[in-house]
Image (tube, rainbow, N blue to C red; front, side, top):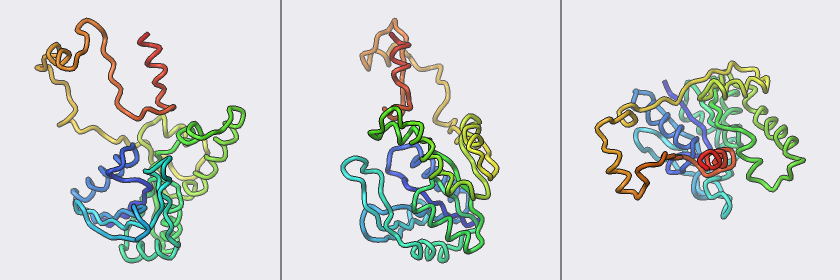
Amino acid sequence: MRILISTQTYAPDANGQAVFTTRLAEGLAQAGHDVGVLLPANSLHMQQDTQHHVTFYRISAIAFQPWYPEVRLALAAPHKVTGVVRSFRPDLVHLQDHYSLSWMAFRAARRLGIPVMGTNHFLPENISHNLPIPPFAQGLATRLLWQSWNFTYDHLDLLTTPTPTAARILRKQQVRPMVLPVSCGIDLSQFHPRPMIDRATWRRKYGMAQDKPLFIFVGRVDHEKRLDVLLHAMQ
């Protein structure tokens, strides 16, 4: 198949959507598919290049410096995105978000009769909790953010999300497309129990107590991760 992925973020960005999309694109390419990725560029110039057998169409964009340098606003006119879709000739367009670039890709695909699916990585709280919104307005902000998401995702042919819990959250928004939970999966060649490891040696190496429970958190230090719950539980 020829698959065009539209995303706001990609490696080397360090966030869940970027990691997911990078592994998806490279995995599909390794499986023999022709994969293109439509994403904002790091400059005001449109660029095209190929890495790891994936073709990138980098649309001119500006970054939200200094607040969110990984967030870039694509400046492309819709006809430029339509030109990319026409030239790549995908069998399927796969959106990773609902922002402006993906919206333009969706509209171009619809005009050309190309099926469009999406994977959801979005929750309103990921945004609203990082904005100066007073507590009494959080409910309104959440509803407006869901409406902006629904503006694109309600019109897709298929919608996926990594967990059954996430799928239930999306179904509560009463979206029209079918919502399927599809796990991101785990590479068992890297992540598996290793009973031969000497735990005491590793604790000594990193200066950790030998006789106390050990908690390890891997992820963003952000509000929705609820690290306060872990810290209170430890106490």
